[in-house]
Figure (cartoon, rainbow, N blue to C red):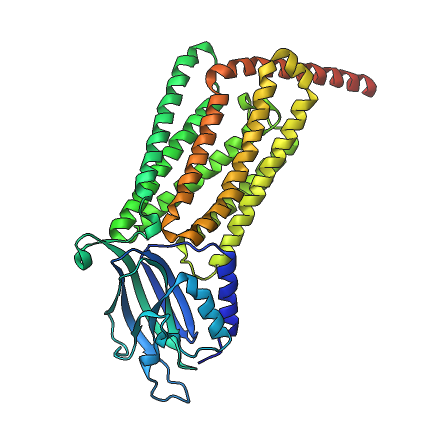
Length: 455
């Protein structure tokens, strides 16, 4: 068998650094003169009974110089338990085994012995009767032989009536997601109605400002985004794929929602607690941070997230896009925390004025800054560690990470809405006017002094 050292080492590094996820979408793979000895294709969490379907077309191979008539019994697909994959790759790298197709670790091997060259539409089936998270691999144990073909892959679990049940294309760890996502959509829809009611009853009291409508837009976008995500998983459950037009709309909506949410929380955090009422009047240093760091990185983050979602777990450049996504996300969060620290310092510099005029303002603002830091810590560090732990415990509970993340986000929105609800904003607005008048008077005095010096 061909030496697999560079490729196996790269795979082992990838498996050790990136938390494994189960994917369910039907995928198409193209191979052109591919001589790799082992090729991981996809992963799936099976619940008995389950299976997979492979449709091969345009199959051809080259005959190596030392094997003019190669035996295709040594080429084929097989399933490997996810927890055994790293050990298998290490054994291949150390040349402890020659062909994994013929080992006990290979489940349901499908060899190419009877495969006809050039034939299109050859279908292969594998049945799975164990609850396990498997990786599908293609093994080529003939040194120097190159393979060309197209492969369409569908993995599924069967629901009801044994082997004749209906196909469910969601991995075992994704099955509860449509139900939970629809519940979160209902919660955001209820919050949208409640916030609209607060805006209507407080509009005549001059306690409603533009940023309150900004928050309303965020709630509407979150509700629509969660509804689309629930529909996405429901469609994947039944059909195993998404229409390209729906993908474009879904990714555009999700990117817009995440960017607006992030920008909103940054704006509320800038230049002191009263900035909630005049969020676009940013200090110069905050403008530079928002427009030259946070917004561009949010765009890069969203693009990277699309490539991560659309690329299979072993796809080309997936690891690179995953790193880009994590780095952009972390830098955005650090910039957000820096703005929070600046705002906290600005507030402390005027703490005496705040405590005299609005004693509750200082307390609420400090609570908000603390909650922002807690939210960043929970959704980035804790949930990442939780996700890795849950996958190690059982692949069937991957959905818990998404549900907990949505719960934390919903709680953060609820706290932010309660803290800055319209009836409370009126007092902050009056204080904001006092600050603006004071700044304007100081600016006019400085201008007068400067004009006298010029004369």
